[in-house]
Length: 455
Image: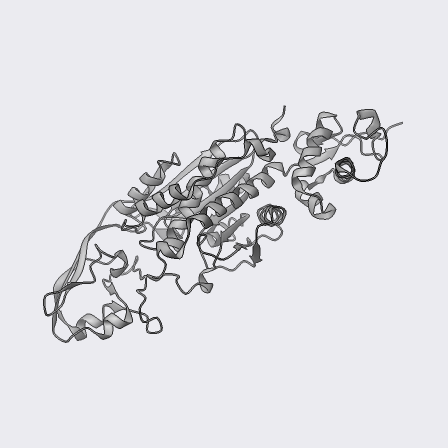
């Protein structure tokens, strides 16, 4: 049977396995303490751990390499960083809380009075107990982050400051994995691995991506190929596009950036730049049919890597899939974004929701009728009941066949027919396979020429 007739993902007895909450918790706790950044050993260790689930291939971009308008920065080496108070107490120890150090801080050792030290401290005046997440990837800075309460309590005197880091010629890693399908066309799932000690904004996306890979890999067949990408936010996707952008322009049918997907809000789909894309339509159709609470918001150039995939030179059909948009969460980029802020059950639900999207994408074939001149004589093909009686599933099946034969003009995909008919994609896909077996429709990719008018 042709791959377009593959219904494996629609069969309940072949449902891909979901992770258990204990598996999710275990992975989160292994990844949480790692000092991550856009380069360095922490990022590579993160990829190694995720690579136990996803067989990642690594691409290392060398320091100084040009990727479009960007240059790959020097690799950041972190060993330790802390401050000693005038009375000898060690505080702001990045070995205890990675958020205490401004990420990518340049090396520094010295003694400063409180006034001098204050110029290198960062806190949130309106969030007295939260520690902010601050970065300085591309400038010569060092600094520490702390709560406003702690900052206000610092005594006068001399402070010893240790920032034991280095900037070296090294690499920035982007990793990917492709699950091959039986036909042309790809689906992208991407997330980033560069934030330390942030659960929702950092770990939720890669964890969902890893277990989604495992579920899809367990299927005996896939019509489409699935591409999984992990790297540092922003510059990572830019670098990846410098290598794979042309391939994605030719082959990508839909893409989803996974981020901020572990909190207690309903799912939120940020639409691509490209209007009415398959990525957008498939997700909304899947969530609606599965009864998954969701909302959709319009594209804007803030957020995560979707802004690069949707940039004018590529204009790829890539959404962001999240729960809280970054502007909606007070925990975003602060120490409040802990493992307690997210839940394993929400991450398992996110994996299940992504699988529903994949089911719809697998089914979304564009069909062309081989008998386009009027409705076919279904009874000749044993596709209509011998007796016409009201009600029952047979009526729905026949209705789906009628919609398919009427709409299969080689231009309307299954998502378009589902939206217009108000019938489920799973029902339409099932009946399309039956019509294809009867020779009444073919996928548009197999179409050679319009049929001659019968005599």
